[in-house]
Image 1 (cartoon, rainbow, N blue to C red):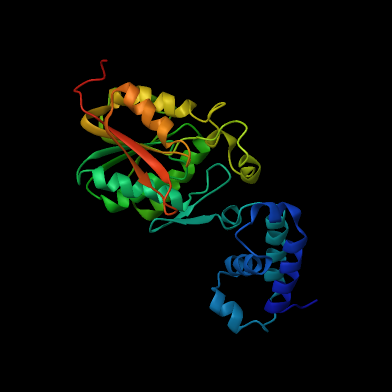
Image 2 (cartoon, rainbow, N blue to C red):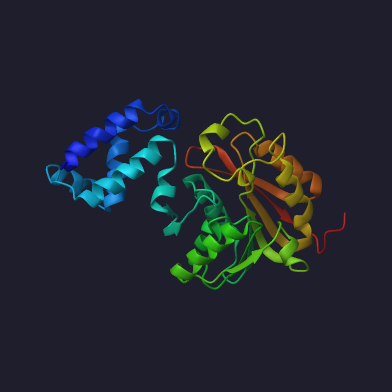
Length: 289
């Protein structure tokens, strides 16, 4: 049975309206908006095309694909996993369920890093996931040396594929935090580590994303503790550590940095005006207390 663009959008909007799993996750979207985004992504058409050709009949193959995506989206699966793509900074990145979906808030970490990274500096990205932060820095600082680490082989493969496709040189290393860079020091270390507590109320809405990239112990600070404790052994004198964190964690992260001996501690705000990145400078020539 044939169906037009408008007919499919009406069908999809009704499906979203009835889908409890989707409605729990989509507070900022309406069923109609979601239907438009989904069909546009599926057909690789913009909204202007969908409105202009609303009475066009869709080929059966497009309907079958759109219906399959609709079922998955109604079940709560993120659109980025359906398309396999997510825009971040100025880049289009491949994403899979092995990686977190890059968020606009993480662009704050890139912006902060660019204020501190020398043109020819050495930067380390810990827990790189899709490679979003490392690749954005490599794009903006083509003369810098960028190294990125992740303990998940599947995520690292996604990041490396992104780097190859974008032709951005990053050294990709597999391992847990600083283990793959033993004996090396950097001008800047950046990280967007797991920072949710085990019982965080946001977790049900993130069920499709890798839990190990989200949760850091009972209070959400376990990985910050590890990174802050070890970072001085991998920073040159005057080097910086920058971490992304939850909106309510800035004071806790600053306290960890201060206790470890970091100075010039400061915060950077996300697009919503909340403290999202905290960093400190390591002034000593070595990591001895």
